[in-house]
Length: 585
Image (cartoon, rainbow, N blue to C red; front, top):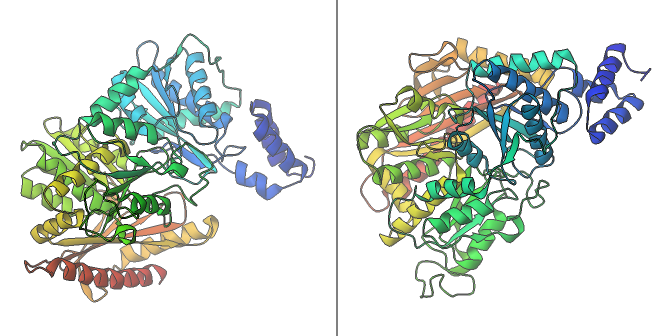
């Protein structure tokens, strides 16, 4: 290591002294032997920031990667924070998905908790994130840790924290826990870890999984169950629980996409294991055409998100010409039928409308984020129920319900495919959303309607709300972050008077917060006619996202909805170009 700068060589030596993982030790030793200063700096110039989403990063050695040292230090810091807020031995529920090292990290979490005089219940196998969120409250735990990187690329892993209320972290708890973690790391000593067979570590039994299945199956409150669903877990952990829950609710088991049904942390058939990504649903759509499905249900690898695709015109007859239910099909042209992936906002408003149709009471609460479609607010007003708008991120969705115990949370969503029906689980739940969407399709089919028919019905009632996104990257991190901040400062100082020929009628800067919302780095541009643009920079990378929405009135004539969709697409295309010019300017 003599060729390395002294500070870097010392940091590597300190890390090697406490790293229990032979894989990451070899990684560091090889980088040091090669004199790879850039490679080492990328691992040691800082530390992963612990925030409301916990940790998420590429696997590898050093404090800027996900590894066993980081996991152990993070858990030790969390236990120190809990020690001041719990009586006796804190109880921590631990879950993990099927990503590389998820099981190893979960064992390290359990060992650190046990060594710190805590008690641990570890999920019995790789299982979905919403089950862990459910387990925290079901077990009356003081905290929960889920080892997952959700829909990130295969090289990543992460560490997600829930507190005893079953909800994700929000400020100031995240900053307080981060400070405790930093204190542990600064000490530079190995974190004590108990063996995995320690008496304080127990495995959750099947009764916990069964309880979650029973609860989630009960979210389907109607009576219609005739639906042929194709399901893909995208190589994640969703196949088992989606199948069990749909069957418990009275549906036929979904048809799995065989090549994507088993957990595989390499995600071999997709570039990114995210239902939103182009190409991610190709195998599922091929299977849907082959079997004549009514709907494609797609989860991300930890099963907290749900993507949906539907055939245009109704049920797709099987490619061999036979009907899915054994009768002649008159609604499609077999395997050639066109399919469409729904947007996150479309899935959200459909599930919200469905939930409100199957619940009652003016104490009901629905929630959505500031970058999600505002159609949900109109649906809520029409139903006479409460609607809350929260900051971006699902950690905020449940907060209005916790702040207003007199209200009854029935549904919440964010446009990034995150949905929650009911409030027993307090995080997004792709299993519950899948079951409810299957019921929605079955119910519509029984009434002779399609999913598009219901969307058109909502559009006629409230106006067609069409949404899209623009994402602008500003180069590498070093030069890009300042450019991104300069762009936001420029828009704040001189917001546009119009976009794509439509007047900007109001500007809301959330930098200092409002009466309803805490501070956030978001600028909202309200457009004449009901449209909107929300500008939100990333907090960790040089990327700025703009969330677009246009509203088009829909008449009663037969072709009105289709005409409105065409007009909305034209308006969104113009708005996309105008916003791109604004941010690139």
